[in-house]
Length: 304
Image 1 (cartoon, helix red, strand yellow):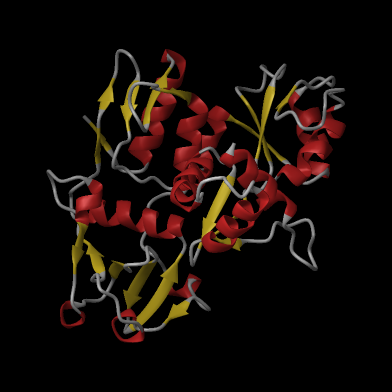
Image 2 (spheres, helix red, strand yellow):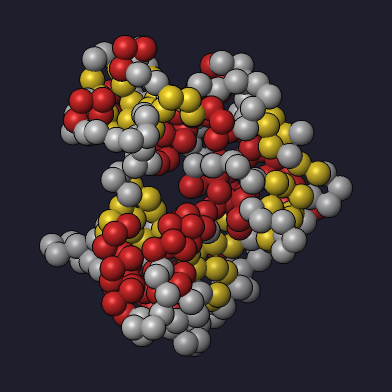
């Protein structure tokens, strides 16, 4: 129930002067608006909300931005391949779902996310969707669009300058620095740091969860994806790649304790089904396993 409410809320909030774009909302605003829409006796949603937002992000429905703000992802229609177009999947901003049905002449109710086009041909479908602002992707081609790990570039972070977190606020918990090391899990790489130990090109996490990049005496606020790509690049630079349990025969990928950039998580979620007996574990059919391995190797992971 809660994921559907999140999607409806974020899809209905549009930017005032560019209504084709969704309006980002803070985690607190989302919690307040959803709680107000529920019966008074309904339990507090704030505890479950963040986990559901992260899951929706992995599914390609939601984007996370700086300052714990979220909005709907750009609309995308996903096909298995260019020949298998009898049932395609819509993901992202639901304000475009009706347009997708109209463009593909489905004749279905306009709220259904699985579309059955009545027009033929990948390129024809792609052109129809492009005209209404929707991308068409195949699962295999998605790997080529995945961003490579990299450290933040200050030239791209103009306007994202942040105050010194060691001086701007007082927290009970410390700021943490990302230091990869072999034989440890990803979340264990965040270690407390004092300002006196700060060095150039450091990835920091604030007690509030936001990530900061420090370089050339300047602090920069990062989006979650920029921070995650930096984490994987720092792991490669330290020769301590992230290890992910992978059981080849059943095609089981265990992502417990692992955070992935949203584009990678979305691809893996599209290719797999959840293992109902293990949280954050995905099961891949034989045909999809090479694509999953290629994506994770592109990210610099080691499959164990």
